[in-house]
Image 1 (spheres, rainbow, N blue to C red):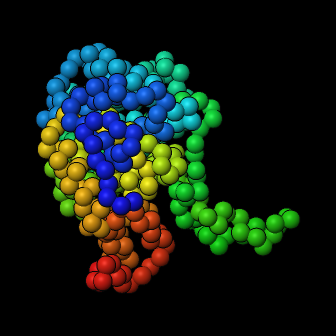
Image 2: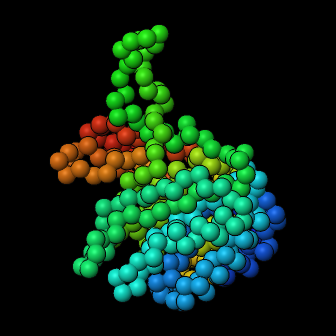
Image 3: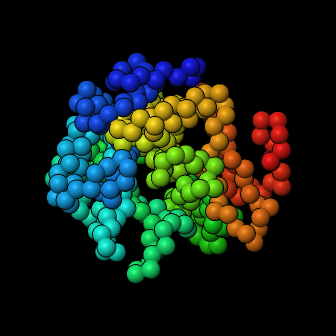
Length: 318
C-alpha cells in the first residue's frame, strides 16, 4: 500500500479521511452512492464523555439525521451495519436496535440479519441479569448486494463428516472451505487486558469489523464509520486494501486513531487474530498469539483448528 495518505477533509484520492468534528458535516461533503459499506456503533445515549444524554425522542431524531445521510452516500449494492446495545435508565433497558429499526425501514432498507455479538465480560448487574451481548443490524440498500460468504467461513464442527448413503456416499458432507458463521458471533470485547485496548471505553474489536469488511466489500471499496472513535473500522478496512472515511468529535480519539494507523504502517500494530478461539483455561497451550499488522501485506490468519505448540512472529517466539 505504501505510505497511507490521511486527510482531515473528504478527499477521494486519500486512503483515509479522519474528520475531527460532527459527522453530519463530513457526510454532507461525500457524493451520493460513494461508499460500499457503513459500519458504526453510535452513542447509546448514556451520557458518556463523547455524548450528551438526550430525551429518547430527541436522540432518535438525531440518529435519523445521520442515518438519512448514510443512506444517501451508500452505493446501490452496499450495506449498513449499525451496532448497538441497550439504553439503560434505573436498571430498565430499552433495546436500541428495536427503536432504531423503524428509521431504517422507513428509508427503504432491507434487514438481512440481526447479528448477536456475544461476549463473556462486562458490567455486573445486581437488579437484572448482566448484559453479555449487543446487536448488529445489517441492512442492504437493494436486493442486489455484495456478500462474499467464502471470505468469512469458519471451520466445520465435524470437518471429516461424510455422506453415508446416496449418490454422494463417501464424499465430505460439509463445505471444504468451512461453514457459515451464523448470526451469533462469540468474539471477546475489548477490556483492560485486551491486546487492542486504547483510551476508548467502548472500543470495537478489529475482528468484528474484519468479518463485515471481508464479506460486504471488495478491494478498493470505501468503508464509512460516522462515529469512528479510535479508528478500529479504519484499521480493519486498510489492512484488507479498502479505503476508510470517518468522523469523531473527541480530538484525543482522532489522535489515537492516527497513531494506530501509523503503527500498522510500520508493522507494529498488534491485534487479536480473526477466527482465534475464545481462551479455554483447560487447554492453555492451544493458543494463537496476537497478530502483527503491516499495511500492504495480506494478513495471514491462523486456522482455528491449528494446534501449534509454538509460533514465531517477526523473529521472536511467543
